[in-house]
Amino acid sequence: MSRIDRRSFIRLIAANSALLAAAKASGGPRYYVGAGYSTDSYTAASVALSACGQFPTNLAGQTVVIKPNLVVPQPSTTGATTDPLVVQAIVDLCIAVGATTILIVEAAPLGQPSNFDACGYTTVFASYPQVQLVDLRTGTYVLTPVPGGGYAYQSMWVPSLVLEPDTYFISAAKMKTHVDAVATLSMKNLVGLASETAYAKPVAGDYPRHDLHERGIDQSIMDLNMVRPVDFAVIDGVWGMEGQGPTHGTPVATDVVLAGLNRVAVDRVALTVMEIPNNAVTYLTYATQAGLGPPDTSSVTVLGDAYIPYPYLPAITPPELFQPVASPSTISISAGQSTAITYKIPSTCYTLAQIIQDSDETPAVVPVKTLHGFKQVSAPGQTVTWDGTDHTGAPVAPGTYLARIQAAASATNTLINYAVARITVTS
Image (cartoon, helix red, strand yellow):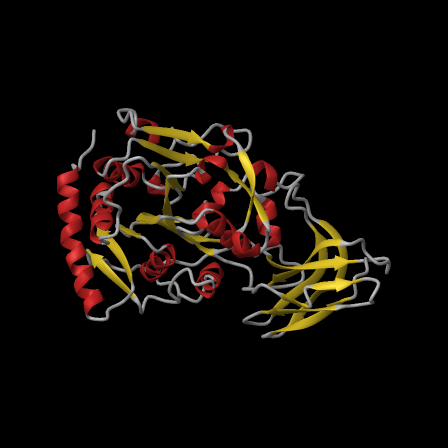
């Protein structure tokens, strides 16, 4: 049963829109994020959604797709999963502004049932005829080109339902630390859209969608956000997670929900709540460089409730590594051309450089040549060359190759960061 009617919501939006208009008239910031601060998840979410003044006021005729983070079968109080009451507040507003079909989507782990029951969603939405709980793995995935050519992939396997026309897509993320990406917020939440079957490692691994990590998780996050941009971002931090997130950390009661149109702005405000430096998350650096949002919170106005930041204990993460650049990015074997591959690291660490192949259609890493094994490299990084030959010294066949850099704290550390650059080899 909806707790919010259209008239009440429109009145709240109108009040906050007046604040937005005043800020814009005074030459104020371009980005706006709503904050709700309460131990009651529904209340915190409702305040955040209305306070930002940007939630759509007419969703008639559109299908709303809401993607929470239900990575494990655990309640939101563990800090691992999105609170169903936060999503209920989103659903109630969607209904208030005319939505008649609302899909709450998540992919079940390989070989396991969906986590909707364990995370409380089945109970909360049992009385909502407009709502369907959809296990993405029961649907169709399509290989979809990444606009702009992509960072790690040129095409990605994503659910066809999120690409349907007249679909409004909401990322309902969780405020958590992450052992690979530093923080998992509204942009990182889209990793759950990638086909677990397509990107799984051929042998048993310690995490799903292994190929996304082996090309570079930060670059892969960017590609997913380019394939399916977030129309509206919400982050549940009523219970967050610190330490070894996204599944093995410690729950933290920060009592805050954030919401806004710009996913990068919402994620950056979340970092301030967590007291994590805004330059610590590489995928947000890429997002800013791509013009998707602000570089920090200096151009962001937070509306709604005041909140109390909490210094989240960070996860132990691999060294930061930025996307390498291959110059030229196309080489000819018959012309005897080589390419220079430059990679950057903010601090001294151990790196490994190699050439691999990894098909977008059937992802599976195939090593081609090691340019150098793990060795200590000082900041800001270095340049290595590749002459288009394999490990035997023979010329490779024409095709697409990836220069892949690995970064670790030591030569034997298994906590590794990856980044790739695409190279085209012609005859």
